[in-house]
Length: 90
Image (cartoon, rainbow, N blue to C red):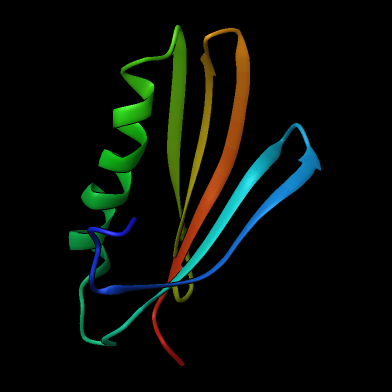
């Protein structure tokens, strides 16, 4: 996520639920950025990991002030799930 200079990462946490083990929350630094232009960058973060996985899935969920990106994968016999929430400031 460091390469996304337009994004302010607010929270990164590990969960105890298999449904969402890793959770990231980010806020756009500028309110006028279009979410449709941000989605491919977020998706590419997952695709780098997914390319190493035996199985990998992801989906976008639109929210009122942004979107959530949900992912699931099996990498080297490890189960990985999580979500990345991106919102506009304010």
